[in-house]
Length: 104
Image (cartoon, rainbow, N blue to C red; front, side, top):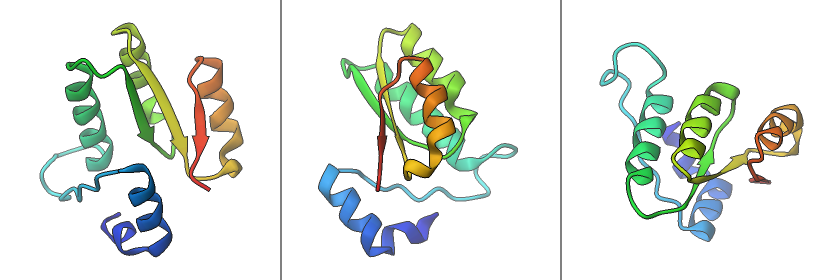
């Protein structure tokens, strides 16, 4: 959501962790969620470098295939969920031996 960048709490969170925000246009991707597609694309690009740990700020289980792909490449994905209310999803990632952090 492009408006997250304007939200003061999110702005503070992004500044604290050095997160770069990239707004994604809705009509550039055809079918599928444009944000998910861009996250997959950027994670794959980063995985092609020497970077070992890749943090993903996600909201759903749609990223399980990406996490599995990163693990097969020998990378160490880290998942950051919005809050502890996402405990069921956190448990799924933890069963995959992926560290889980919470934004709040």
